[in-house]
Amino acid sequence: MEKLLITGGEQLKGEIPVSGAKNAALPIICATLMVEGESILKDIPQLRDVYNLKEILKSLGAKVTFNNNEMRVNPDTINAFEAPYELVRKLRASYYILGALLPRLGQVRCALPGGCQIGNRPIDLHLKGFRALGAEVYIDHGIVEVKAKKLQGNRIYLDYPSVGATINILLAATLAEGQTVIENAAREPEIVDLANYLNFAGARIRGVGTDVIKVEGVKKLHGVEHRIIPDRIEAGTYMIAAAITRGDVFVRNVLSEHLKSLIAKMKEMGVDIEEEIEGVRVSVNRPLKGVDIKTLPHPGFPTDLQAQMMALLTQVNGPSLVIETVWENRFMHVDELKRMGADIKLDGRAALIKPAPLTGAKVTATDLRAGAALILAGLAAQGETEVSNIYHIQRGYENIEDKLRGIGAKIKRVSE
Image 1 (cartoon, rainbow, N blue to C red):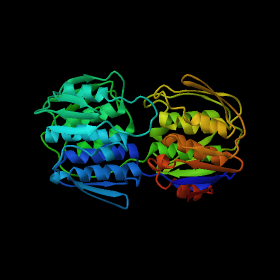
Image 2: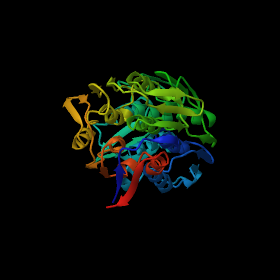
Image 3: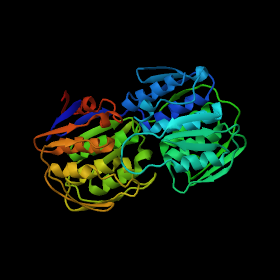
């Protein structure tokens, strides 16, 4: 087991790079199973989740190589339709093999997936979509099996704009017969990136990025080369790191249009943000004030940046209110922040944050984004902060301690 040691009080200055988006890479890697021939994916982040997904693809018979952030996948040798439980349980995105393999093999089995325990995350909308396309769905002892001799396009309304359900239905519909219309679809940039990959490969998808997606099914797809978009959550985390240390940081490889809600809130607080072609510059030259935040599906404020933003809100002038509407267990970081001196009161899905000095403490990363929030709190705290359970952080941030050291943070990884 490893942990991070952080000595706070350093102003972060300089330039920090952003890796490819994990939440775009994972579904696109699964989508390579649908094509004929090799796909070359660039800017794939070297993360625990990516390596686990690579092993899932290899277990299915695909040929996969991964070197220097470039992954090559050739699915022509696939000879299995069930992913091993010991791999599937490690990451939630493993369920994308359902939508990818169903139209190709007509049958796919997968254990209910793992990932961060941030709330009740059922896949009923995914299965509703598969049934609407003509598939039969069976669930037995935690194993999902989906079968279909032929998938037929249909009109599907999602009760909630679920990212996972939108992606899985989009994958299956791409090789179905006829037209599929997904209404109340999720609008996240990672879904747009997936659709771009599929369209390059020969799919016919329109409307992605809006709440109505139309898919004209095609008979086959071909392998292509594709570069993954920058990770907006990693970028947002580093932007908040600059603000919480009152620093001056250029965050390179950022698509600022993907972070409009975060940029608006940070500007409202008093953070100076300059949007440039290559990235954004974040600096603080005045006292910051509290703001109210409500997480919402994209383009609203991202739930994946709520914990990091809460760490920042402990270090501003005046109270702030954070309302979490996406995941019911997304406040697990609060108790850990309070161990560092934070003044936070919870009332259901609302958190009232009042300014308070932070001091170093031994804390635990309860999930991926909570771990990032504790790193940020450690950067602003007096003394040393020790963050354990960092395997959660390694699932979503590539070389985070090396990148932060590059802009002046005192952070190191040690064995427990």
